[in-house]
Image (cartoon, rainbow, N blue to C red):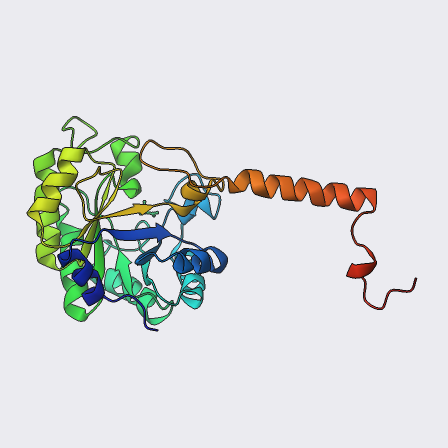
Length: 274
Ligand code: KIV
């Protein structure tokens, strides 16, 4: 069976079927996320804090992101795999941006790449234009763009129009320009519900919200948050499991079993001698 393609995404979008996307950074989680039936798997740069233990997304290197994407690629059969370009692996020059994005497709097996765009971000709009002309499918990302965290000063909701929050108009215009440049879909992160609705009405590509309210074409969540696996509890998210507690209990039980002599047993031994 071949993976979800861009025409498949458009077919669902045109039929009004909500699109689903989740993150994965390694093979075991990717395998389960894929089996659960999502349309797209994002190998997010949120791996920076959720997988590699950095404070945020910024330190994630190109090589780490490529390695995560390749692991996900090896595990996924059905969903579209999207590699997220880390901070400053694009935008420094057009040549370097194209080369680095190309490595996600050629070396890591991604089906598409994602990159973040600041309100009015000329540089990244030009990169999207070049990549899509060359045949690299690109997913855009506007609203809260965590790679600009130092500049914005925190995880502020966008679309409120104050110092650390772009105006709705600026976000709508940026989204329109990204759609014109050729993105096949657009992530909207932490924006007011009005922003989510207006962007969705303004563009003719599917919008995928995370904290963008109800009036968008699809949803994405960070899987570690959804699973309760070292994730955090955010208003924009929903926790469907408590894997931290499950893992903690399993490890405690193992430690107790070994200390009490309950593991290993005769059944666990090769050629037991008594
Ligand atoms: O890196 C990531 O996980 C993301 C999602 C929040 C969309 O960009």
